[in-house]
Each structure stands twice: as C-alpha cells, then as structure tokens.
Image 1 (cartoon, helix red, strand yellow):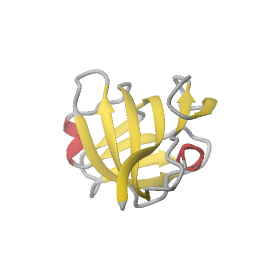
Image 2: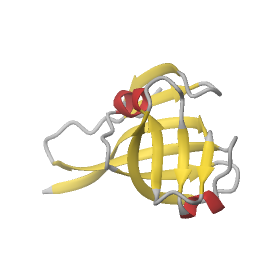
Image 3: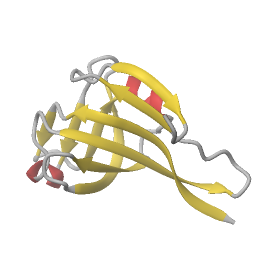
Image 4: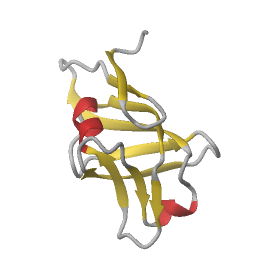
Length: 121
C-alpha cells in the first residue's frame, strides 16, 4: 500500500520575486532543492506565513547558490517579495519505506543554516 507523506521541507524561506507573467511554477535555488531531497517537476505545497495562503505547484530549479524562491504565474497575486514561506514536498511511499522528512532551515537570504531529519527537533 502506498501512503502520502511529507518527505522534505524548506522552512521559512524568503520569497525573492513573484512573476505574474511566467507560465507557472515555483523557481527554487538548486542548492535548496537538492538539500530538501526535492526534484525538478515535483509537486510542492507552499504556505505563505504573511497571509496564510497555500498554493500547490511544481518545482523549477533555479541557479545554484543565489537563494532564489520565485512564485511564477497566478500565485504572484498572493505571494510577494519578502514574504516568508514554508515549502513542503510530498511523496507516495510504500508502507515499509523510511518516511522521516528532511527539513532545511534557511536564513533571510535563503542560505542553509541547518538540515535536520525527522519530525522531533
């Protein structure tokens, strides 16, 4: 049996841009994508800490090391530069698979300050 779990999280990232005219998705610095165990094209849920808005879309990898977190297309109406967000990556896993999420903590420039595994810190 497959179950859906949160497999990775980028905690309190800062939105660096919101581009209404882009086709859609969220662009995330490749360093953060890889650290969280995410993949290009993977569906993620983004929760805006400023206004509570949740949004689901897919990942586009941004340039490594720049700290980019850009909401593209329609979510640009709800996510603005400077907003803090939590990005959750879900996955379907078999009953026997490890389901401890990787949590990436970042500073206000979206640079990694700590990576933890599990749900109890």
